[in-house]
Image (cartoon, rainbow, N blue to C red):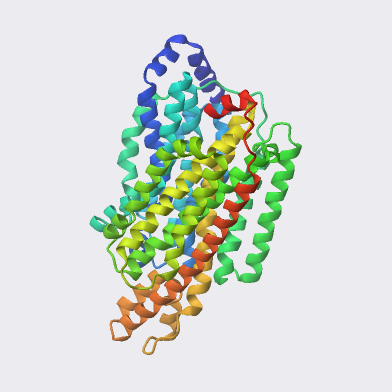
Length: 528
C-alpha cells in the first residue's frame, strides 16, 4: 500500500500541471510550513514559564521536572536525521501529515496528563511528531521555491521563525498559564492543528520517492539511544534518586559508547544517515560547535531565568513573560542585522563577537540577589538575545559555506540536529548543576519537618509548594532561604555558561578559516 501511494506521489510530481499549481501557491505553502515550524519551536520553551504551576499540580521530583522540560528536545534531536532521510525515501508530505496527527494527539495527552510520568511520555511523543514535521519543512521550501532569489527570501523567513519561536514560547506560556491552567500550553495546539491539517493536504506538494539509497535502521537506533542515555546519566548524576549515581554513571558511559559506535558506523557506510565526513572541514566543525554551545547557553539559562523571575522576584507568569520579551525582540533584531554585520566585519569577528557579547551580557547576573533590578535585567536580555542570534546566523553561514553543494543537505541536517541537541543538553547539564548546588545550599529551617525539607530541596518550585502548604511562620522563612539557595545555583550555571561561551568565541576566532578572495565559487556558495 505504501508503494502504491509513493508511486502516485511520484506520478503527481511528474505531472506538469500539479507542479505549476504548487509553484503558484508557494507563498501560502511557506506560511503553512512556517506555522508548523513555529509550533515545534514554541513547544521547546513554552513550559519554562509554566514550571511553578505545573510543579504545584503534579508535584514532580527535580529529575522528573527536568525530563518533562527536556525530553522534547532530546527526542527531536536524534530523530531529525532519521525522519529527514525517511521523508526523502517515502515522501515528505506524508511525514508532515502524520507528524500533525502525532503532534495533535500528544498535545491532547500532555494537556490532561495525570502524573509526571504520563507527561514525560506525552512530551516524548510530541518530540516524535515535531521530528517528523521539521526536516520536511526545509526540504519542501527548497522544492517549491525554484527561483534562487525567492528561495533565499523563503529560507530567511524560515530561519527567523525558527529563532523567534523558541523566544516567544515563554510569552505564550505566560499568557495561557495566567488566564487558564498549565495544560493550556499544550491544548492550544489541537485546534490549530485541526485547521492546519486539511490545509496541508490541499497545499503541500507531493515529492518523488528516492529509494536508491539504503536506510540504516541500526544507525537511527544507536543515535537515539546514545543521546537519551547520555542525557539520563547527566540528569541522574545530580541526585541519584531513580537508579543511584553509580548505575547512572554506567548508563552515561553506555550512551557515550553507543554514540562512538554510531560515528564509526557512519564512516563505514556507503550511504550514512549523518554525513560525518563533513566534520573534517575545520570551518564546518567550528560552526557546528558554535551553534551547539550558543543554544546550550541560551535555552538552559532561559529556563533558570524564567524560574528566577517568578519564584525569586515573585512575578506572575504573564509578568515574567513580559520581562523576557526584550530577549525575543533582540533575537529578531539580531537575525535581521546579522547579514549586514557579517558583510562589514567578516565571519570570524561576527561569530566570535556575538558569543562574546552574550557572555558579557551574562556577567551582571552574577551580582543579582533577591532584589528587583528591571533596567539591568532588560539590558542583559537584550544583549543575550542579540548576541546569540548574530552568532547563530554567522555560524550557519560558516557551516553552509564549508560544505560542498553536493553535501548541503547533510550539512543542514547536522545544523538542525545541533540546534535541538544544544537545547536538550543545555537544560540537562545546567539543570543538573542547579540541582547539585541548590540542594546543599538550602539549610534546615526550624519548624519545617525533615521530610518536607527533603521535598523542598528537590527544586525551588517544590520549596514554594512546601512553603505554601506549611502555612506557619516557617513557610515564608523556608521560601526566603530557598530563594537565596536558588540564586547561588543560578550563579554557578552562569559561570559555566560564560566560560563555555568565551572558550567557543576564542576557538571561533582562531579556527574559522579566513575567506579566500581568489575563489569565486566560494562567493557563489556563500550567496546561495
